[in-house]
Length: 121
Image 1: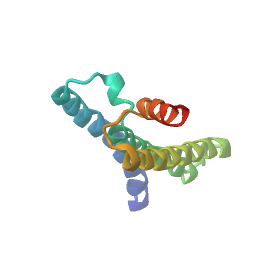
Image 2: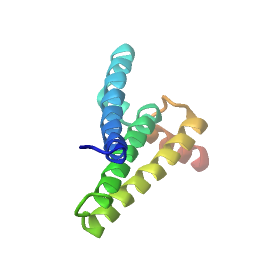
Image 3: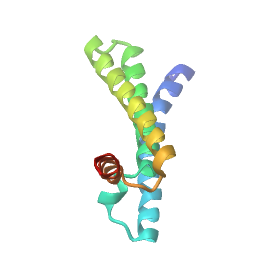
C-alpha cells in the first residue's frame, strides 16, 4: 500500500513534468498569436521562468524520492539532482530580474546588444 509520504514525494516530480507540459502548451498558443518562432520564444523570460520553476519541482522530487526510497539511491545521484535544482533556482531568479528590468517579452540576446551599444558610444 502507498503511504501519504510517498504520494507527496511522487507528486513533486509529477507536478514538475505537468508544469513543463503546461508551459510549452501555453507558450505554443502565445507564439501562434504573436507569429513568433520557437527560437525567439526560448529567449523570453515569460517562458523561461515557469519552465525553470517546473524543472526545479522535477529535480527536487527526484532527489527526495531517491533519498527516501527503500534502498536509498547513491549519494552522488541525490547530490546531482539537488545541484540541478539549485541551478534552476538561480536561473529563475536571474530571468526574473531580467524580466523586471527589461520587459517580459524582450529576448535575452537583444538585452546584451543594447547594453553594449549604450556604453560604447
